[in-house]
Length: 421
Ligand code: LLP
Image (cartoon, rainbow, N blue to C red; front, side, top):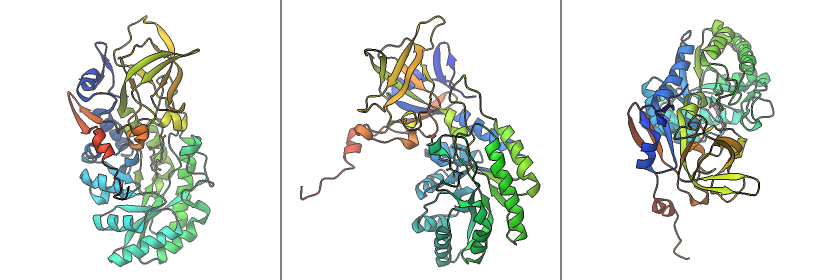
């Protein structure tokens, strides 16, 4: 459920009209609903009420500092994968002891900044990383709290580019080698083992792959405890999927996910962490765009809109479906037509949808891509020298620009021409 609904024929974000924001901000832009973000966070928080827990929002899915502050103030922890994300979380007022640091390529510099600024735990993914982290911690006279990310070799049954828990993937340590890796961690003076981490992929639409992975983690917990390690925390990753199309079978709910977690690992009495991104942010945002032209091709009608693949790359990159809705609600009985919805970028991949049935649409009208809260703004680029587009946050009847649109000058002045040219 989200808060982008029609009221009197107008698409709203909570109590603010999208057309009104467009008039003030100009198109294209992303708009996020605070109520939806908070609601989704709370669904997870409630679903884990059975255990001591921390819901760590995956910052990579939507990293605007205002959004992080909103969620942080509501009690969320943060899952970060770079020091840039860490500094964003800190800038949003999240304390280091609620930030977990994931990712396979943390540099020594990143480790140092996180250790100095405070960190809940590092999720380490290789022996060389463990060694580096221990060295950095020793040089600072501290011990770094760690979990080891294990690769459970389960099929997440999701898009190949966002599946991470098979043995051929670059992530984690094979679970079969976990005991020897934990033995090594225990020997390193700069590390303090606190738990186990697992994350098998994103946009999972079934519970079964999670269940298989968590069962393996539960077995490993018992083995590692028998080996003398203190395993008091399980980081179970993110990945629960969202419905991208209104008419799809909906993925399992957070409450079902939470109950499954209790079934599989509850008996271990560990503190539970999860790292959801998409389910919190995905349907909390839309991308609003204006139709520049309607072009009749030989076989197709093209809606050429002012947003492009540089603003929302998911259709081009993962063949993802995003619902597209008019900002002025279609009237009952309004004629529908199939459109190819495309952006202005000079490659055919800049296509959001092919043959999409939509109410007949004219140049100058506004349409919105739904489910554009996660992995949209954060994956944007300036390809074709299109400046990044603004982000707007709505709460109740108020809205604010939370990232302004850069001017062309801002964009161009980042380049510099060497003296000798
Ligand atoms: N934790 C780790 C270690 C991750 O790698 C990810 C996502 C998450 C948590 C959050 O997963 P979520 O709950 O959002 O599914 N750009 C792609 C998605 C990439 C996901 C990468 N890792 C897309 O647009 O579909």
